[in-house]
Amino acid sequence: MTATTLTSTTRTAADAARVPLMLSELRLPTIKRLWADLAEQSNREGWPAQRFLGALLEHEMAERETRRLARARADSQLPPGKSLSEFDFAAVSTVSKAHVMALAEADSWIAQGHNLLAFGPPGAGKTHLMAGIGHALIERGHKVLFSRTSELVQRLQAARRDLRLPAELAKLDRFDLLVLDDFSYAKRDQAETSVLFELICERYERKSIAITANAPFSEWDQVFPDKAMTVAAVDRLVHHATILEMNVESYRRRAALPARRQRSAPAAQ
Image 1 (cartoon, rainbow, N blue to C red):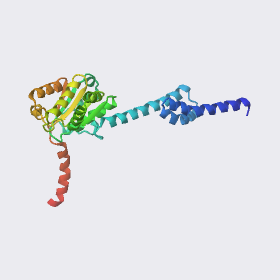
Image 2 (cartoon, rainbow, N blue to C red):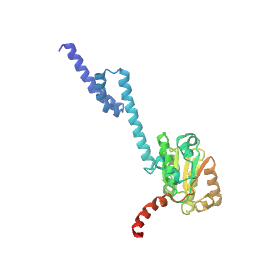
Image 3 (tube, helix red, strand yellow):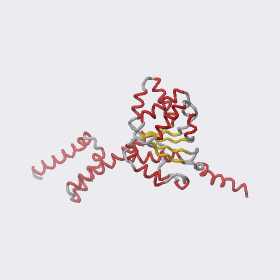
Image 4 (tube, rainbow, N blue to C red):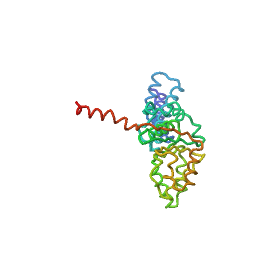
């Protein structure tokens, strides 16, 4: 081996040793993990430099997107497994699948701070539908937060007691869509009603709210005992809103019927 060859080999080994350090500094973990194997394949198959670089960057971008989705889903607190692909549109004839898919794929209503309201009896699939839309929006790069209305109200009440309600509302402001599940809960006191109303006002025409509710607007005096506040809240939620009526038989009850019939069949024989 000549001195020139030895020097070249030493330099190559030194460069190879530096690469992982530089990739760590640049925060490129996927390239750090894959570059050596891809470099070996590239050398063996005679790839052009641009193909080698492109392959590395494609892997890095794909895994970054995977990690982003995982973080966004964890932050959203959306119920897992409630995707639109798993929703039984045939069982909810009052809802258009094409309309729902358009809501899940279009960004305009989110960008304009429009709302989405789903009404129907318990078990009609409202939560599943809203969660499915939320999951789809996360895949499109939006930030979503799912919460039971009662739990979020308690969180805001605690913030008000600690004199940090504006800061708590600002935290919620980073979410493009706030999903309030089971909105029409039992009647609350004036303090709880007040923080919920402030949340609605804070997001009005800026950030989107989606709600699920068993009770129609006519019964919302159970949520907002003050009539003027009820009218004002409904007005803000309905303005620029899409309303989904899901007045169908309970999805859970329908799903339970076949199992119930199967259990009772032997006894009937």
